[in-house]
Length: 301
Length: 295
Image 1: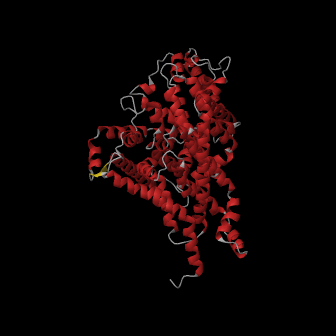
Image 2: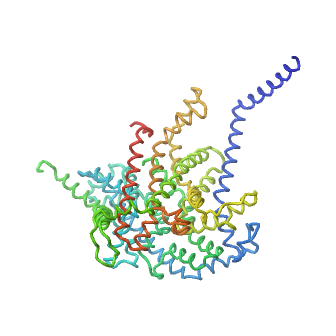
Image 3: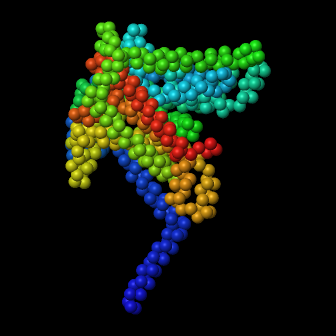
């Protein structure tokens, strides 16, 4: 009996000790924080692993990517792989094509979606809200659903193997998401601005161009970044509309590279890394705009 | 008509002038294209000859086409990535919503994969999933597990593509994070005073407050999953044994490899209707679980 009760008492003491430890808010916070850090560090390593793997492979001597154990830091690193990968195929030409398509598409989206977004945000006209709903509804339309008729249309126009099928639609405000985003921004500007400008004899287009557009520059920045990412990486569009090697974009060229030099993972990773780097660099430069754009989508969507 | 002021008509004129670009774009590239797609879907046409009208023949053919069913099955199985990404994204957002040091750095790291896409990423994951020399199987081998052939395996090819999609979980995470930061701290303080524990706070405050964003991520995830193409085209070409024959890949093959323009258009219309049905279904049920503040 006495023995048992002693044990019980000891157990109890441990339990109360532990409870005391746990009940202290400070301790609780500390433990929680340690768990959060642990999860974040493990998760971050997992997320970064593909990038490390890519960089590591791209710096290896062709052939040595097939060795055990994994040599994470190749000695010596072969920076020459990047030059080899880039010059083995006409990547410079494809870079030029991609820059041209991406640049013009960004311009198209910004100009057309700003004009249309302004119309929806700041002019009151009958049917406006119903039409805006229709704009939002087009977000549900999958692009693959219209590629066949578009291909036939552009073929009839003689636009296949030109940049026109990829660029021209962007000038007709075909992105509902960008219209929505810009409309939200235009709506936040006070209406008194318009009235004051009108009293001074400014036309509606003048109000749009001279007063409102300069005030929503951050939003235009968001669209620039988003549409850059989209068109830079686009694959299905160029695949359908471009067939001549000279007209290829980087994405198509990389795919061609894969077909030609199947096992050269070192060079494939080097070329892939070069092609991904503008997106990553742009993300770091425009991080604030980018994140803001996404958060607005969530909060106002 | 006469009762309306000059200003009214000015607004009508200017309003439609401003949105005219969209109207033209919609008529040509959306409505026109959809109508064109439907017209072509009623024909048999290999693009060089003249289209032959066959009524609903293409739609009938779909019912008997085992590859159509297979592609639908693959795509719907792939939808499993949506709840996975929703849950993981929310969990990650909650971790990254803590006030701890270096949090900005962690947010950037987790978001980084979302800014990469396309062929380059597909090639990277092909190499990661390489059965003998890819990083996953080498690491598994280190702990004594012999990994599957991934993209070369009929069983594991689709799960591999789902794993790859989870890498981009940061995109949804960021949207949650925005919503989490929009929840007034007063809610949590009041709940703490009332003696609520962490789990109760999560269930009664956090979850209801982020349901609108959950709905957004759900719909975007479903629409996106139905349009998977690049990964399948670059990494598996639909194989092995059609295990990754995604719907859009099958559509592409019909249209641009075999030039069955009519049949591809019928597939395109069914895709459109399926996405519409899914979105409609989600929106219909959403009123019972989505909480809108003040509405």
